[in-house]
Image (cartoon, rainbow, N blue to C red):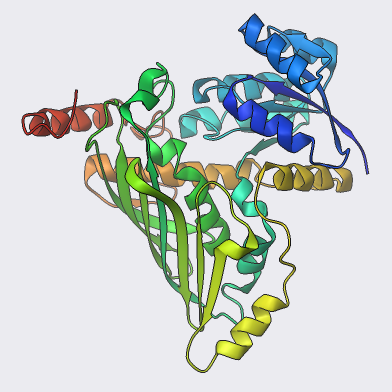
Length: 377
């Protein structure tokens, strides 16, 4: 098993999560470099984690440190530009979510991957717990049966002060609100478990927060296998929780957690007459490791060792990003959106606000509701 040279770009809060989890990979990773435009923050981060290389530009880091993998922990607006720079240098990329601010930007990765010979992967760490792997195998199989109905809720709370950082809550810098920046982890897991989605109908609104984007969205999604799911993304929920429930023919699969899960966060319920078979099928799975960044890191290293495509790679990450775009497109146009409909020339291909349509719709909503004191503009 090879030890990989890793660099972190951006040394804010999420970078510490990456550094801490790299230390839990049992020597599979060596953190050799970090990069940030803030010299003081960079120096403090490098000192805290014993990182030998500290750089103010990504170009200098790539040329001097020669990492195998770069972790992008910068604000979302920088993800694609920095990913392209790494891929063109032949360096693998693990990017924090969202992977891009638009499908148009994301599709630029295809050429860069082909030319540089490296691969892009997105941090979707909920896919990598043992229970998620077990549920993915059992949902749709003989023991659990065909998935029929599902729900996926990301019900979080963020006060107005959360948006004091100027890039938060803007279309240009963050790409959207909770649909893009928060719920994307949970509905990515839903897609990982249920497979290809086909059509979405959605609503979105700005109910209470001083942000340019939505602070809540709700969608009804139909999957290729016939399952129907609801997806709710909120930053208005004082009792925070992240939940998935999938009702199959013979079993209900439930996950309730917040920012990460252990096996204990999963509940499996057999239908009447199928309890023993369902319980036995679940117990027969390997159910030790919970979700988390280190689980995804290790899966990435194993794939590189074996010459396989990176997990949570560009193809599956695009499927998740396309669902986010479709939620916005449906919410702001009032119609259903099918998979594959948002292509070059479509107003939502170049941005989640649909060439300003989302901005105008939410602006009108804010104007209509502010008189009642329910929203600050």
